[in-house]
Image 1 (cartoon, rainbow, N blue to C red):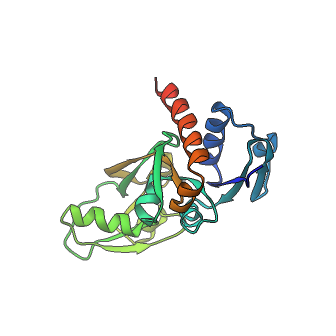
Image 2: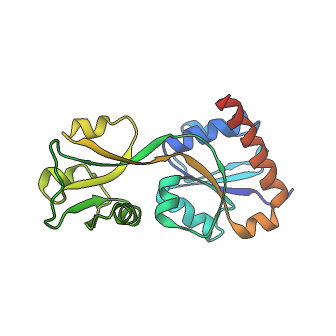
Length: 212
């Protein structure tokens, strides 16, 4: 048997939805996926090895060839700009990027500050809007920034909007819709094209059926 196809996936909601897609595409995955805390999980019947990582790290694993394939949010892809192929929109974990702030916020010309986990994406967005702002990169709870005066606004992922509401913030501008994508290492695509194409085709059929 050939070596396992190595797949990098983020933990949490995206992982759960991606695994369900793979099962619908008839990939034989072990039941331990559902409750395992392992960071590397073997799926011998499918001849695959799964690497569980933080969402922002998945494109890094794929770009450097540690993983052949990965599942990453479009937000991460736009922020990281990694040297990988984006081959399929899996249409899972739907959400969107938005600008948020305190109710009644009004734009001023006095050194506006924006906090975000996505400094590159935020910088590009405000540049396109013709607004010059100072971007402050945060890794943790972005919502706290306007509450403590660190920033006037934030740029972050919005799913239900509940987190914003619970922290007294309101959505000011919707930026871009986000879904999770299947990404591939360029070298792996040349060396394992038959297996990767088969995986893409099987997943694409499931995605199309779910959208029908």
